[in-house]
Image (cartoon, rainbow, N blue to C red; front, side, top):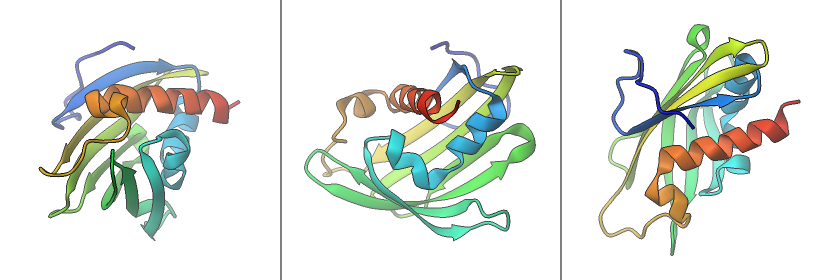
Length: 157
């Protein structure tokens, strides 16, 4: 993985990283935007249920259950899309035990490769156990990006 300075559009707190994916940018963007499939590649998530869709049929509001060391906790996120920039952003609703904000963008570097820039800020309320996945708890952006990269390799020809 290579860390690059985020562009002006990436005004989000938390970790951010960029990695090259050996798949087309459009395909990776659409796969990442299939939010209901996230538990297939992100093992800290037990479930992802789309509760509201936007006019294009994409997930707008999603209810998640995350695996903590001794518990499972639910939270919901709202999603926003910028198809022209292959960018998706999400954030948890206010007053939740898990505060999540993130952004992913896919930039083509050739017909069969792209750069994925990923930013994530996750905060768990005091008194709750840590995430069950130690790698995610220690460095959520890096762990998430690696898991999506491996999933894209399997899911996209």
